[in-house]
Image 1: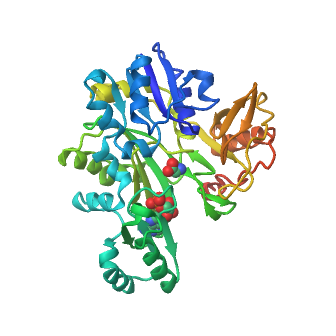
Image 2: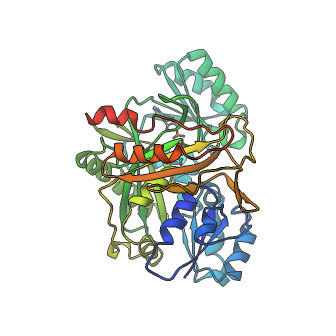
Image 3: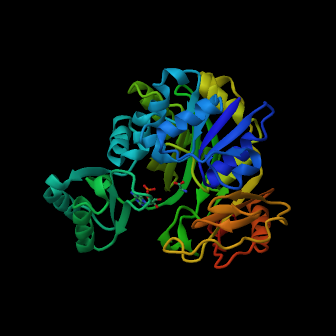
Length: 427
Ligand code: AMP
Ligand code: GLY
């Protein structure tokens, strides 16, 4: 089976790395990929948003399965595009069609979906430029902090949490006035939930699902969860407060109603669902859905899966996932993301990365790297993710930090406190 993974980050390297361990004879392609995916397969110079080019690559390389990494091609409808093509009728696509991807692509759709299916989430209302006056009146009924969400994809920047009422009104007007383009033509205003966040993940064939390991990521650039939001500075799995009791509430109140809700609404969903959850006094609330795996969450989830990932994906493709086995390691995984100095604001790239050969005990997942005449250079904000497994989270973190200390490039930055908040809880 020839498999094409779409994307170029740490998530896609982790997917390719995990699939490369399959006992089945697989040939892996990644488009566009990175130097990490090139170590376990073939990179193709194809933009995942250029659907005709993806189609040509599938035909040229006799691809039987496409695994879509990032959200943009899903929300743009790559699955519908490929599935509608008679010449590609034998190609399985792992990733929902446009209608299922609305769980991530439209906050208003996601909130309405949760309301229809009784899935716990913050109370909300949706407004447009025409109803801006109502939005301002609605805000008067809420107490701070105010949570404003642009409806569409806004590269992780579409959620604002603001304490000051007047500032929140100004931001709301800017959003409805076009600050985020068409992603902000609708704005969801919702109740603020105080709790601790974590993420749950499933893979589903639309009928049954498999619960993958959960994770907690660290989104802010600065230690102690300060400073700007990033794509993610590190992650750990398992999450100590995701007890069996809490996870069974997540399955009963969130996951099952979501899979059944999709089915009842006639939305065929084959792929991953990422549930961003808030634990509010022991009860799960959905903060957001994503129609894909997370990054850097994938870099801790996939290493904890002991069974064959391809077997599960084949179950998704053939709609017999309930007969496939998922075995999860009891070990802990921790990943630390090395980023370019200045990220998430402006940063320089093109610096050589050294120390990549002495990483015993850890696994490196490439993200923003590029190969140049045999040398590995930085080529993005999030550069490399360093994952380790250990019997405890502490041990996994210690291994990752030891490896991180040997990897160098000009301006390298990373958070030194991944998992530290959870250590306090464990005691
Ligand atoms: P999202 O892009 O939907 O994941 O939101 C970004 C971040 O905003 C989340 O990870 C939460 O930390 C925070 N957030 C979103 N919605 C709420 C809410 N209703 N209450 C508290 N925090 C929230
Ligand atoms: N790490 C958050 C995400 O992948 O959306």
